[in-house]
Length: 325
Ligand code: NDP
Image (cartoon, rainbow, N blue to C red):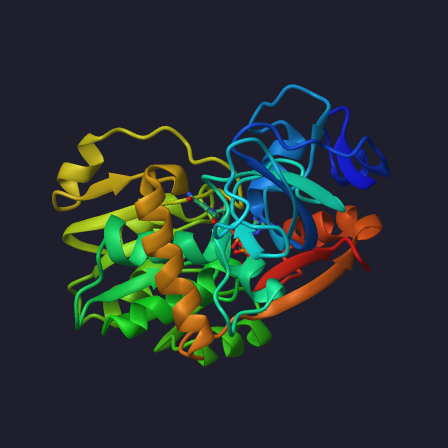
């Protein structure tokens, strides 16, 4: 079968598309024919070596597709039976025609949700869900900053904050992205330049309840100035690079602030938690209460271009690789 692999870490050019042996599902695993694989920022951190991984490894973590084989111990007439449409956030090597998924990770996709939408929601949708409902649970009337408001996480997070009664001040880098962020429900769209001062103005000098920051190095320090006393800095990624070390005394001086660096794994610790969050997100999509923007579709051979586009800030919403073309 065809798959995308990394043999040595580096830029997008190290992504190789070629024939590999079809994987065999082991105990407690299913083999899936991939309809759509999601492209995420973490794929670029793994490819570049920012998050070290032994090479060679298969690219892509997230996807959706039909079960075509069952490993030992997986019930042949259960939710994960052959032919069932399933989605997952964590199956290394998902940018391939077929991938092995742990049954503990495979989530049955409900009627009314197609494979592309399911693939688009597993990693970024679940992330938006735990950020808005658990890391800093937005309360009615809260104002928060969402950085990269037209990105994959940003568009979904904005909608989830708004559905909880929050007000979003989104940052974006272009007028087109600003329009998309507004369309997702952002009350105000800011440029990155001077965003903290602007957020303060827009909250009558008080500051915002939380900053959701997936941009990292370029925005973190200034974001602390946008927070109200006891406000929460949610640093969930580093699209512009990792943040500089900082002195915790700063948190005292700026009003007893909180800083957290969450990860999806810690917010989907049990099968029950994974299914609860996925259940919400997929049900909202099925009911048209959550809009999912697929900003780019790529063939397997174009995975390197998807990485270039993502890192080059040229994308909006979700990027999908479609192994079937
Ligand atoms: P996005 O679609 O949001 O793409 C990244 C966006 O970041 C860009 O489009 C760009 O938007 C903005 N950006 C700002 N500065 C830069 C820069 N210097 N270089 C590149 N991009 C920049 O990506 P994702 O939705 O996939 O991920 C967003 C963040 O969320 C990432 O940091 C990712 O690692 C993190 N994440 C964290 C998870 C967790 O559990 N902790 C899980 C999932 C994602 P603009 O042009 O408008 O500024």
